[in-house]
Image (cartoon, rainbow, N blue to C red; front, side, top):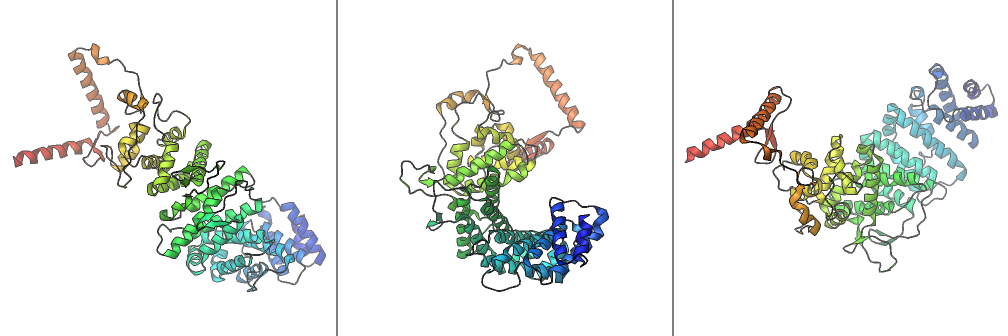
Length: 539
């Protein structure tokens, strides 16, 4: 069996060449193994210890790589990590990853495979072991990773090293809040990681916060995409809780990063799935950018070429915003995982629209164009408006709230405008939560430019059902054929039915307070009677 042979080899009974050969066979047999036999747990622990003893010796490079690959496979099992997560053994792996040296550059190319495998091992170990996470802080691992990242800056053939360095920084900042704070404030992690992200795209700058856009730009390679994704994930952790900028330098750093993220949104990966992954992580990071810096996503359009394919609005380049809209629609069309996949982009677009007039007006023209055909309900159809209105009654409360909020902001938080596009039934949840059931508008100030209704909408408006939001043919009134006695009988029958449902606690009749919020009807009646009494007393 490969495990026994490898264990015998690292124990010295198989000879130097035998260790390399038997470990190679073990690696080949377990390359795709992620669940191990419980009965062999003790043997795997012994193999870990033997490999680490071997790595602490002066062995040839090829043997180091195979030993590290075997250790990486073994480190997938949390239960065998006890012998690995000691200070001495962590230091052995850090030394092999060139994290303990202060040399200015990575000179020996033959060491690169060893560095990469050592970083992979550390990724697995840190992810699976709380003890390793604590040791990482004690051993100042984050600072060493930042130093290694600086060495990779202008080096060739180091993309794999950079990628796993970034992945380890992401894991450390994800699993340990102290390391996240250390990266942000002590190690200057924001500019360092931003530079790593920039280098993945080979960006050329034409002006402050404006990158060169090549219409024939080729897609990123798989390696470049992976590096960019790892940098985006690490930056996301480092920039958590960065809603406000407190200095001019902070503002510059975020605006510079946003310009790179705009370039990222306009860049394609090697496959459609990789492009979506790249854009998804860019959107997650943009959610951490202070809203005052998001105007960098749009830039003045200076190109006068008649063949120019840029999307413009009021003289601004809206290419990045169009990418966000397409990404949002694609996530809606997937029909699943809305909370993880859709809410970040909806939240980002809502923030942009609330704070930047040009972005809001451009998006409204795309999502809520002037109404012409109102024969169908707002939620019926294939337009982006129809899809978003359907989400307003989604079973997931978070998804429902952010979809409604997005449309409300597009309507400048005016209730009458929202109802025109969605109908009262679809908007009732948002209006109840905002205390706007009686009408009015939200608290955010918007420009006073007015919406203009089309002639088709104006002519249909008197016959539109305000609840459903669509045009209905006039229905015959069933009460026209009734006598007054019949009407009174049906009315009392309805009252008795509601009374029974209320007494049995099946429903609670609700009313609307003067401030627009919902309250049990009994309270409304009591308040009304109190007000009437006070009014009569004053007379």
